[in-house]
Length: 484
Image (cartoon, rainbow, N blue to C red; front, side, top):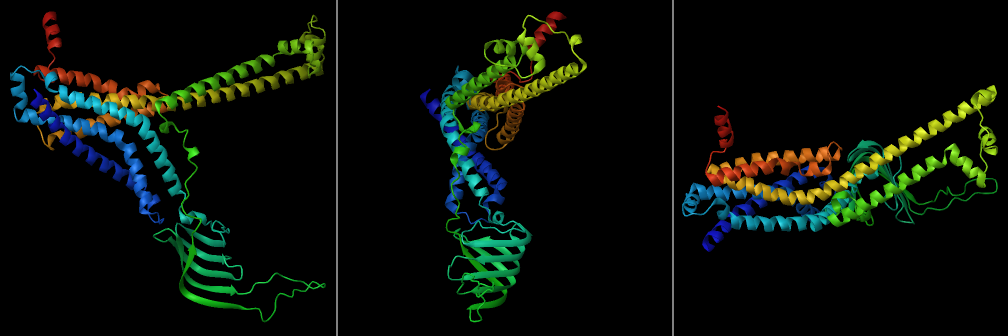
């Protein structure tokens, strides 16, 4: 029995590691392809890209693990069935549940580690890679230039372009003030901007332009009559033209700065279950406080409450209400008022009704926003637990399928695992979208895939353990026979 356990675990571990590595590679390449425009052409160092991919890899593990568990379980039981080893084990008196017991223990350990990883590591990884990608997206050099306006994003330079998109511009004008003893002005009909590989320099590839240099700039001085004396004929300057030139700008101080990470700390996917619980409690408490204050304000705005307040130490604002308050025992009827007083009373009532209606609409919007925000926290809360259970359920879907299909290797198991994983991915996507849109509760949305796959897993396990066809329904057959 010990040899059986060791053999089954070895048979499961190899396909699991291979499948997990392939899945991670595919998912990372998908992410890289999605953000290829943000990563290329900015002179970002290789260490930053490696750091980004490292954090992204950690956050993609929840997608790769279910596929790896599903495929490895199908391959392991498929190999045992294809080589008639599963039949021999069953003939010796071992049930399918006993045979897969060591694999079940391994999967439970993996699922438990996955929960702790999703709870403590993945929030940090999401926090890091979101922060990094935000920094990278905001280091695009072409964004510092706005056509038709001077840009002073680079210290010591004033740069203006007439028109252009991306990295190519027309009508380039560069004022270089980095040297206090020299003023340099560069004009060009068109130019192209790019960054050096090490990210330390910015290059303007200019065409058809000129360079004007004032080597000894002086502050303007005027005579009492207002004449300008700075235009001295011996003032040193020079001018040159070029058909093509490259102008280099030092980017020291303009390197990619780490964004303020506090901007991302309160995001839903960057918190563990304990932090999510605390955030939900805070939202509920703040919501109750706001609602209590709103109800109290409605009560205080009522005429009866104002009358009580007036009897204390306050004086009402309107004359019509004041008359009834000064004589609380006197009832004033609408028909007893004059025409102007009736008009004033109607206008006052309309104004108060509109104000209350606006307040109610604002309060409804606030409640909807609060509930929507709370749903996002609950989605992330249930996601961590649903992922752990989904790994176990997918194992009990793949293991009996491998025993039923009786095919090992990377042929039929890969096709079956890919189809089942597509179903699983579609189910979790549907549940996620429905819960975030408020159509269903976060609990149902996040556990929707497990609710659908769990009966299938039980059905397949019973069929594989009893060696019955998958699509046989003995219970329904018995019921039909009794009815006949």
